[in-house]
Image (cartoon, rainbow, N blue to C red; front, side, top):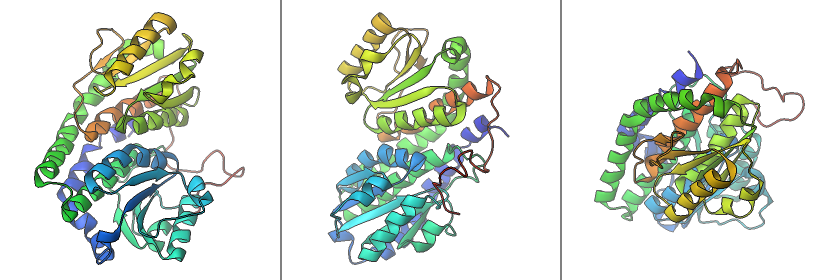
Length: 353
């Protein structure tokens, strides 16, 4: 079993959640009985991959639930002076041991506000202390660098939002059905996307492996996936500086620092077309290699497929950045370890077992 085998398993937990979505959210609605109608904000809190999952899902959570939604890191959240008493605070940590996420949840519990946790087991510390626990299906993920966990954190947030919106009547039956079909469509495309990514890496292997750093651009939902992709390359390949940008915000200064030593990955799913096409032209004219992911820009560096025109498009892009990170590691001879002691242990603490 290697990391790429694990990445390929994502459709299994996606389909399980689709089948069991009512049961998955049953305790949440019991917990919110009598106060669902007064919830006027959803706040998503998480660190690391859980943090990028919150950033990825927040736009859809707001759209599907019909409730204003914010994604925030726990350290910033804890610095706030004012909290909304009518918010639903959703704390995400796959292991349920993230230190600041647990501290943040305890603070909201002490204030008497609505709290829900998303973790891989009801036995995690975060789940045990939460007002309500929602299970994150991870198919017993073996690796500490979370790949299934990223996809399923985002997907769980999305399912929660769909069930809230459907129950409140802010999400129509037609839209609810459309989203379910789009999620299944993304799961059905997963194997093909993984295969295409492996072929794309092989075609561009020496260009990719001889760069000093990676810059990833995504718009909307895919901004969060760009952040996660940068995190995964840092976490898994361990030898590249990486950063993820929102498609528009990444035009405000960063482009001035790019050289031909950087690999610029541009997620082109059809959003922000004017900016996206301009960035592609700029990088290829003035910098070097632009690796366009999604729509075909007519270049040999492209990884071409038809992006879904729904927020579930993240399920197409996530395995691409994860396999990229894994191949950069494996092809350099770097061993990717399963869950175990972290190298920073003894220097600083991010999790409490």
